[in-house]
Length: 239
Image (cartoon, rainbow, N blue to C red; front, top):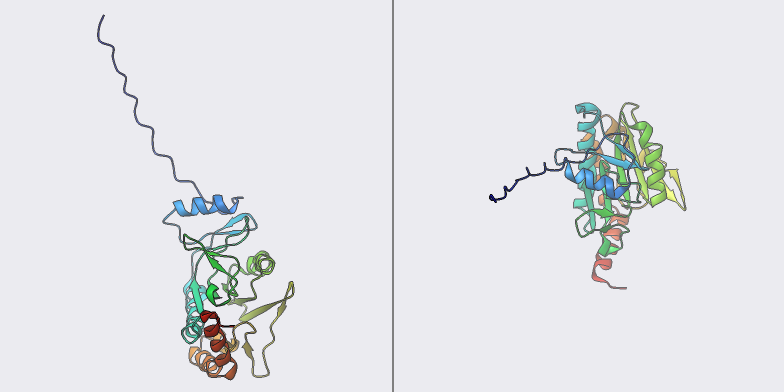
């Protein structure tokens, strides 16, 4: 008998990376698995079980407003130990929701904040404040996202409607969002982050010198000093 012939089978091709398309209906774990596999993808969100992807980002409609919003909150964070700001970070909420808001601000968990960090560095549960720059996304930002953030306990939600030249600032009272009212000078003052003040008209015209001047007034106020002292005390575990 002859020597048996060994048939070598060709190796199986590597599995294709899972796709992620706008409109896909997914659970949060499956959405996260696909998003992680697509290293080139910069932004995708899961809202009420449906995948949303942004259109290309325009300079004046989104890029510049986004930078101003991040700078405003970043300056507050720099003067307020115990507070953190995140830019375009995905947040694990319910099984059907993993948004990636433009900006979020939290009180650190060790200082009494309501959000938590996972072992793999995702933010879990609701941050205290979320802000969105809204141009082409107004319909989702003021509808589906608003309901998701309300239901999950985001305490303040800001939507800057760039094309409308308007800003909405919602505060969670009990289980409903109510509009935060500006004072007679047109200045908004956060109820969750004392000293966080905003001249929305100046922000709308991209006059950041005025935006920063109003913020600095808040950062030198007695209520901000009291808030910083409260955060410091919480960090020490003192009663």
